[in-house]
Each structure stands twice: as C-alpha cells, then as structure tokens.
Length: 275
Image (tube, rainbow, N blue to C red; front, side, top):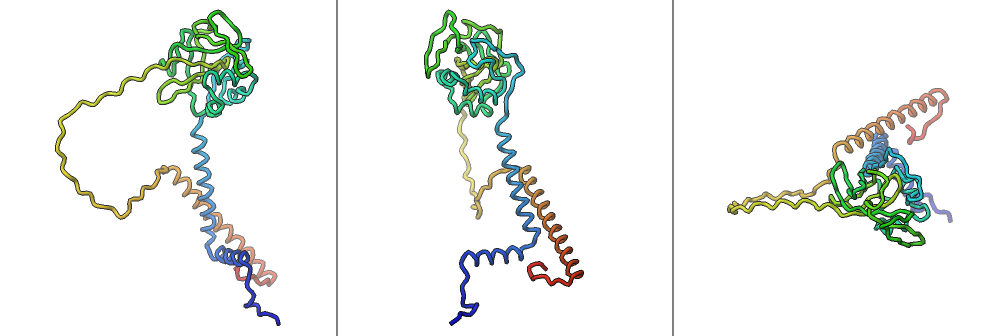
C-alpha cells in the first residue's frame, strides 16, 4: 500500500535545507548584503590590527663581509636577519648569548634601532641603555675566550678589545625599559651588556589622612563593560555593512527587472521564490 506524500517524512538534512532556503528568500536582500559587508569589515579591521602590531626594521649601512662576522656580510633588515639565522653556525652563537629562535622570529615586534660603540656603550635614541658590551666573532684576537658549542667554534670578547668601527647600528631589544640584548646589523654579531639601572620611582610624600564621608552608590541594572574597539573600527564595519546592503539590494532589483522583462517577452511563469 502506497503512503501519501504527507505521510513521507523528509530526511533531517533536507528539512533543514528547505527551511534555510525559506528564511533566505523571506529575508530582505539588503540584510544579506549588510551581513556580508560587516563580515568583510571585521576581517579588514583585524588585518589592519595585526599589521600594526609589528613593523619591520632596516638600516642604511655598509656590510662587514670579512671572516670575523657571525653572519657573513651581516643582515640590514629584520627579514634578512630572520632568514640568515638559519645559516650554518649562527644559531649556536646566538644560543650562547641567550637569543633563541623564538626571539629572532619576533624581532620585528621587539627590536628598536640602536647603536653599539667601541667603548662598550649601547644607546637608543641617544640615551645609553647598557655599558660594558660583550660580543662574539669567528676569528680569535688577544683577549678573547674560545667557545665551542652546537658544532660551532667562536670567540667571545669585550667590544673594547677589538672593534674596527667607532660605532655600528644594531637591533636593540628592550624589556620593561631595560636592555636585554642587541645584534649588530653590519656583521650579525650578538651583544650582551650591563643594563643601565632604571631611575628609582618617586616615593609619595606621606600626608595626614582625612576622614572620608561614605558615598552611597546607586546599583545599576546593567554592569556589562564592552571592549573599547575604537570608533575607527566601528566606522569601517558600518560603512562596509551599508555598502554591502545597498549593493545586494540593487543587484537583486536588477535581476528581478530582467526576469520580469523575460516574462513579458516570452510569457514565462516565475516560481513564487523568484517573484
């Protein structure tokens, strides 16, 4: 015995698809476009935020292409430094100086432009952030200490012992206002040094406490604090949402006019969802 069409149940996935199509056709096309535009706006805002978090650093300087350089001919951009870190014998030297692969990968976001001087000073924006600098090189000179680590042999010494320049530009990494390490751009030689002490924080002058009057605070029904995303981000999302809504609305009207013209010309009958 055959079952009636009403008695036959649709599979769940087909039923969901059917209702989704109904909701789609009942929802104004402007809303469709606005949702798509807002989504694009969110992606744009997030992309701009990520891009602003890191800025590449580069130096206009000569290169040291001699046998002393840890990185032959140095690395004058952060992207080059990250790439040349993988050169043979570079990572073991940096590891000895406490510089990890993760430190190099994040160098765009952590390093600032600085200078290493032949008297052992390290400066940033003309301010001394460290003294008594120690570095490493591939060749030995008097006053150096030989180190073999990770299959690489290099020589550690104070900058004052042997330095062919008066000063060189360097990537300087600071943390909480204090020097951590540096890498000289012309040669890629790492630098550690004694950080300049931070000035002591001012101690507040003790004052006689004044009795405070209790303040009655009226409770609020809504205590939710929304994140501060900034007006610029909201404006971008709103503009793209409106633009997407209008584009979708006018596109749908254009398609509808063409279908109506086709009906008048050929007498084709449209289904309810295309009307």
